[in-house]
Length: 477
Image (cartoon, rainbow, N blue to C red; front, top):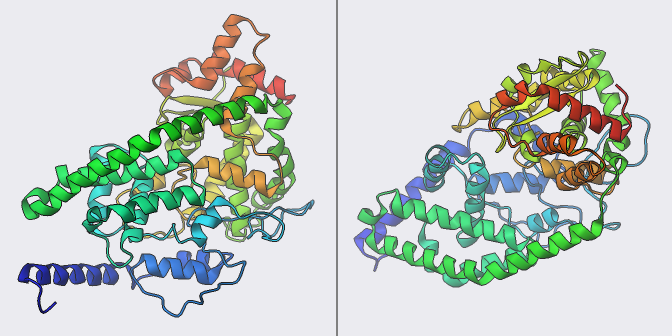
């Protein structure tokens, strides 16, 4: 530093001040609920190291060869193992898989390679970007995009998050290549690139960077052009990947309604055992349940919405407490209730039986409060999290219900069924119906109406279609 200019020295000093401030803000206070989750993780040490590093701490002396079973845990992505058949609720439903019996999953591979490591989301660069996405762009999934950028920044410079990565084109290209080599789809890699690109467009167009550092501002603009070139080069690969997926979907054929809901049948005995504990008042409230039992209730109810009622995962992710409280009795079938979700891309409704309503209400009153826990009030979206009906074990709103559905299938060793497969099965089953009936089913599945209130005015249609779907599955009323 002796030969450095005064401006460079001041920049280093300011960077060090920000690092110390960030450490003082995030590294000294720990929530008990977070420590409990770390202790329940399959790899306690790995999970603790990841949390420390995300807060700006340095962990030294880590063995170069970690034990085979030690895989850093990823927040909100518990790793599960196939379950042994049991007539009672399992003690640990989502354990670390036996690597001697099955291959390494994508998430385990990403974690073991360190690609889930990220800078603190409290860094000034990321906080301002998050606010821009949330408030200016009204991006409901802004947290995922900010985390994508935080991981990228960590790869470019593990010590400090900054915009200086724009001067490292080769290393940037290496990062996106490594994501592909790890097994991420071309479309997912494109999403990472889009996140970084939007991050730079924000800092070049919506901040004072052009006045405070014109050289860096110009470098950022050049870097955006560099990302454009990468996107153009990979666009054909994305198109081929999409075509291949469509062909694979066509080859899979259409499932029967029994196959669609097979995981619900397989998990029902365990699920009812947990519900029995809650219904009998053995828990106060829900605190005596294990984390895996709480997750089972959550995943099972998500599966009911997605598989049994053929709704998009976004309906699960966007359903609110207000919408649950505002559920209404079905005029034509008093034993059923209609739930409307209006914050999804296209408003949605689904119909629950009296028994299912009881399950959802037990989750709401007994399980959900435990999921929320005593989280820190340090981010702007806390109110939004509190309002979401489905809450993950990390006390945050569900942001990818498809992942939860996949975990449930893996746990009970049932062939994976996605929301698209379920919807296609029900749509295909309508081929013998009249055009009017087909229109009703299409409306129930695609929800082209603009608001949930309109769905409530059309409850007769929803009730009739629900009755058709139940008849198709062989359910009794």
